[in-house]
Image (cartoon, rainbow, N blue to C red; front, side, top):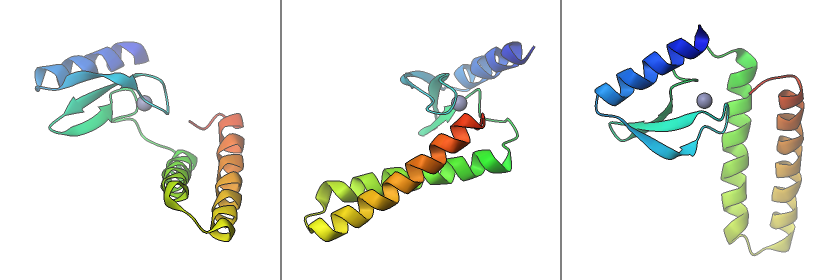
Length: 102
Ligand SMILES: [Zn+2]
C-alpha cells in the first residue's frame, strides 16, 4: 500500500516535469528526483516526519557543514576541535539510526 503511494508520487513528479537522478536518498535509499531545480525524495517527501527524524536531519547537515570546514582548516587545534564535535555528532546519529530513526 505504502509502496503504491510512493510509485504514484514518482509518477506525479515525472508528469510535472521532474526527472530521476542517479543518486539515492541518504535517509531511505529511494531514488532522488529533481523538480524545478530542487532535489526531492518521493518516499520521504510528503510523509510526516517525526521529531527525532528532524533532529537527525539537522545533525546530519551540521556534520556535513563541519566536514566541509575541516577541508580548509589549517590550524591543528581548530582541526582537532572540529573533529571532536564531528565525532560527537556522528555518535548521536548512530544512536538515532540504532533507534530506527532515518
Ligand atoms: Zn527518502
